[in-house]
Image 1 (tube, helix red, strand yellow):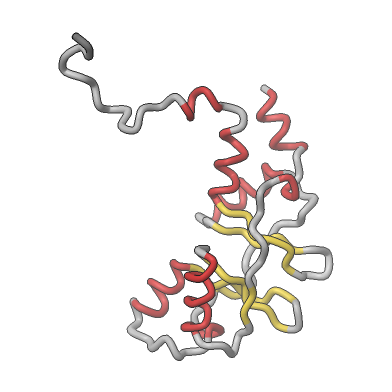
Image 2 (cartoon, helix red, strand yellow; image 1 turned 90 degrees about the vertical axis):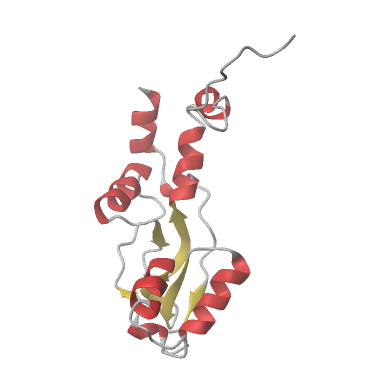
Length: 155
């Protein structure tokens, strides 16, 4: 199948990866949340001197901050996910999908050889890639596939 082959040959750089939004470890969680809200994204990358050291996601906010009843003034370093799984821009899309599935991740930082973030691959970008292979199936689905009319339409 063409999709299986392309998942092995197309690189992560061909996905619609979002530009990386970064924050420093000492900044408060409130800054990270404000940045995510402003750009309508689900994560920010935590960097020191331009190198990735962690990721702060909506899940981290809910579980590690709100769930632990911490103030939003706490440094993001205390509630981020340190040393996140990353993917290289030239890696096959299949490896990104496998990493996301294995770890249960919704976001995967894309980093260059020096460990500098160059993008973020999300589940959304993977879905957009897959939709290109099944457009008729996806675009022709009714809003509620389980809904069946009880009577024929028309006069």
